Structure formats: C-alpha cells, structure tokens
Length: 261
Image (tube, rainbow, N blue to C red):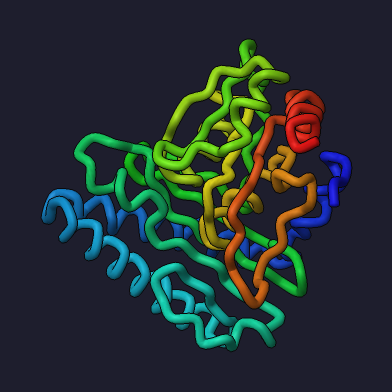
C-alpha cells in the first residue's frame, strides 16, 4: 500500500535510546571492513570471495556474542535457526555486501552492513565502505547534502530494475550502475546521486543497515509499490528498495507510481 514519502520512512526506523547500540554497529562495521581490506592482499578471485564472506561473518558473530549475547542475529552467511522470530532485538548483518566487486582489483563499491532491529523497527545501523575509508551510521548520522543539480539514479550492475525505463520516461535522471547496496546508498548519502532504485531481488541483510542510516539522516525510503520495507520477518526475502534524497522524493515517487499504474 502506497504511503506518503515521509510516512514510509517513519514506519521503518525508531532510533535505539541507548547510544551504545549505535556506536557498536558503527565500530563492528568498520572493524570488519578493515579485516576485509587486509585480506585483499592475501588472496584472489573465488578464494578471496569465499574467505571474505566467512571471516567477516565469523568476526561479527563473535563480537556480537561478546557484546550482545542475549540478542539474536540474522546474517547472510549463517543458517537461520528461527530464534530471531521470537526475539525483541535482532542484529541483521551482511558481512560482505558486493562480494563480486570485492574480488575485482581496484573496485571500491563493496561494503559491510550492521543493523539492529528492535520490536518491529530498525533501531541502529552502520554501512562501512572499507576501500574508501568512509562509514555512515546512526551513531553520527551524516548531514543531508545538497541534492545533485542534475538527477542521477544508481542501479545494480547486474540486475537493473525492470521498471527503470518507465520511471526515466517520467523523471529525467541519468542512470548509473554500481555494485553493493551499501555503496550505492553511500553515494546517495554523500550527495553524488539523487536516488538508489533496486528491483531485482534482495534480502533483508542487503538493505537493513542502508535503510536505517538513510532514514536517520533524513532521506526518504520506500518499496517500489510505495509501502514501507519491513524487517525480521519469517521470510527475509525483500526484493526491492528505493532510497532517495528528500529534494527528489516527490518527483521520483510520482514517477514510480505512474509507472506502476
């Protein structure tokens, strides 16, 4: 069900009252990213991708066990035992978002995602972009930048959304492919793009941290159908997302709704 841009965002995120949760998300994402950067000099290709996923996941699970042992965890790289469905607090992590890009020498569009869900809402989050040294988090949410003078929309390198052509017929933006949901969100948060639109299949761990940080920073978030994304559901499949600079939201939302109609 479509809702106004600001309401969709408000239905997703309620900041955790304890600053320690926000700081922990930030510190874990940065530390896991540093581990992954070091590995790039040790391995190549498939071996690097597999080891990166495994080691980053192990690091995050171990640290969360030490720091928040009573909380549940949903990770892309771990079997889901279902304990999270009865939990009030769940960490949703993607130990290496953009595994393909991570293994390509010189590419910077990969990320680490760490998010916290509490009682129905995202409550904290961090996106680390280790290859550039940047990190965005709800611990110290970035200020909303000036919107790009000419609109730019970021899309997947491998799965651009099917709705893209219809949207661009109504909203004159320049599409640019990029890897990693976290990297695309970082580019929007930095003011290098107007929006990130995805419609080719994802899971909760792909967008939980990017969405938490974006909403905390004043950006607009929705799904393609206009509804608010929901997290910690029994089925973590969450195939589409839109993250947009507030100055471009009305135009993009209208284009998305017209394209759907």
